[in-house]
Image 1 (cartoon, rainbow, N blue to C red):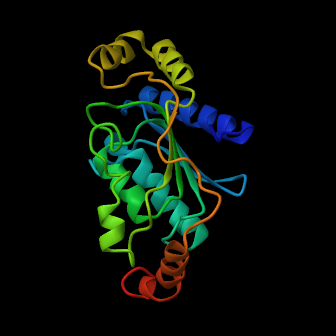
Image 2 (spheres, one colour):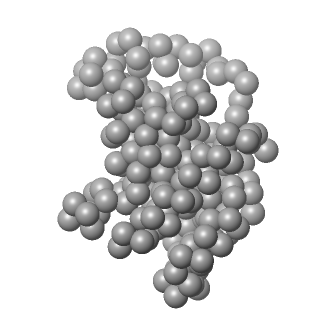
Length: 204
C-alpha cells in the first residue's frame, strides 16, 4: 500500500475536521487537499452554515484549492476525506482531475466508489479526454478505525446510528487504482493538450 507518514498526518487532520463538522451541526465530513507535502485547502461541510445543499466539504475544499493554486486542474493534488465521498463530490473530484484520493470510512450506500463507480469509471475519460483525466489513484479504508473511534467519542448516539445503518463502515484497507510510476504515452499527450489547449475553452 502506497501510503506515507504525510498521508497519516493529513488524514488525522481530516478526521479532526469531521468531528468539528459534527460539533457545528453538519454531517461529520472533513477534507484536506494537499500538494507537494503542503496543505492547499481544507473544509468541513457547509450545508447548514450556508443553507445550501451543494456545499459539501469536498466541493468547498476543491473550490478553495483551485483559487489558491489559480487553476481548475488539481491533477498533482491528493484529497483526504474522513469518509468516502458521495457521487456528487466524486464527480467534482473527477472534473477537477485530482490525481489521488484517500478515504477513511467507507460509504456503501452513497459512496462514489463503493456504490456508484464515479471515481473508477473509465468511459468518461476515454470519451472526453479533453476534459477528464484517467481515474485517480484511490485508497479506501485508510485509518478507518481511527475515524470511527473519533466519531463515536464525539457523539456515540449519532455516530452509532450512522454505523448501525451502514452509512459509514470501517472496512479493510484497499488500493483501488494503485499508483503507477509512469503515465502512458496517450495519457501524457492528453494531459498536455488539456492544460495547454482545451482548458482555454470555458475552464480558464
